[in-house]
Image (tube, rainbow, N blue to C red; front, side, top):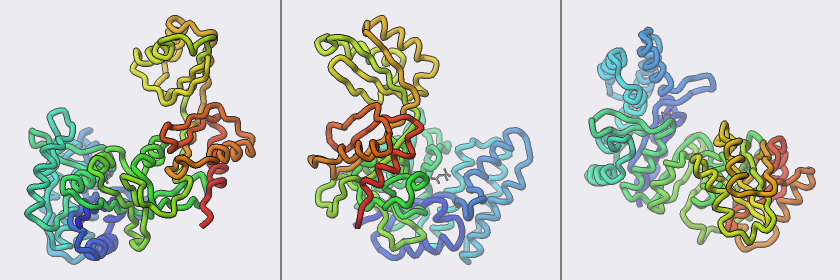
Length: 439
Ligand code: ASP
C-alpha cells in the first residue's frame, strides 16, 4: 500500500501546522511521498508567500525596491525553522534568490521558491530526503507537461528512496529553466507523483473536510459528500464546484487512483473520497451534489418540418464552428433546436452568427435568450430510478421558477435545467431542500 500526500498552503502556513502535518504523515507507514505547497495564509488578512514572491518580482521589474517584501518572506521561513527547532539554514540560498530577483529572474522561478524552501523545511523536520521538482517534473519546449519523461524519472528516482518530500507547483523546461503550473498547481504535482509511483491513494490535505453537496455560500449548512465518482466530479466541476484543478484530476483518473480530500485541522474526518467507479459503494444517496452557474445564452431556432430536413443540425452547429465556439448543450424538439452557449464566447460575434444562421439554415424564427443560468443536479443514484426529475421540477414550481430548458445526460447521471439568472440562488436552495439527506 502506497499513499501520496499533498498538503496545501494553509496546512503548512506556520510551525504549528507543520507539526500537524508531521503527525498525519507519521501516523501511517504507507504515507510515503509528500508534495508540499508554499506557506499560505495564517489568518484572513495574511498573505501567501507565493503572492509575496510575485510582488517582489513585479516590483523589481519596475525597478522599485522590494527589500521590505522580501524581508517578510525571509521572516516567514526563518520563523518556521526557529519554531520547529530544526538544524537547517537557508539564509544563504534566500540571499541568492533575492539577488536573482534583482537581476531579472523569471516570474516562474521566483514564484516557485515558496514551494522549494517549504519542502526543504518539511523534509528536514521529518528527517527524510528532499527531491527537487526541477529534477523530476519536466515540460517540453512548448511548456506542456512531458508526462512520459516525468513518469519515468519519478519512478526511477523514487524507487531508490522509500520516503521523500517533493515541492509542488513547478518543474523544469528542456533549457533547465523553472516553469510553474497555473496557480494552485501543487495539486497537479501531487497527482503526477501519485500516478508515477502507482500509488493506491492520493490524499489531498487541505483546510476543509471534503466537498459539500452544495455551495455553502448559497445553501445553509449543506451535507458533506462522502463518496463521489470521477464522472460526477466532472459534472459538478463544470458547473463551478471547484475543489481540485481539472489538470490535477487527470493523471490519477487516468490511472484509476482514488483521491481523498482531507482536512489537516480535523484529521479524524474521513473527507471526500473521489473514486473511479461507483461499484461497491454503500449508502448511496439519490443526489450526490448540486451546482449552478450563470452566464449562458440560448439561441432557439424554429423551422417547420425541421425533423425531416437532412443536415439542418449540422448547419446550425457550423455557424458556431466557423467562429471557434463550443456549444454547451443542445436540447431539441421536432421543429426546434436550441443551442446553449457561454455568453462570453458570443461577445462581439452574436449578430454575425445569427445572420449566418439566417442565411444557411433559413429558419422560421430565431430567438435569443440571454441571462440564462444552468443548474446541474448530479447523482449516480438517479440512474435507472424514477422520480428524481419530478422532484426537481416540483421544487422549482413551488418557488414559481420558470424552467427554460431541460437536459438529461444520456447516462442519467445528471439533470440540467436552464432558468433565469436571477432565480439561481432560490433554485439551488429549493432543490437542495428537496434532496437534503435525512440521516
Ligand atoms: N503556491 C502556489 C499558489 O499559491 C501553488 C499552490 O499552492 O498549489 O498558487
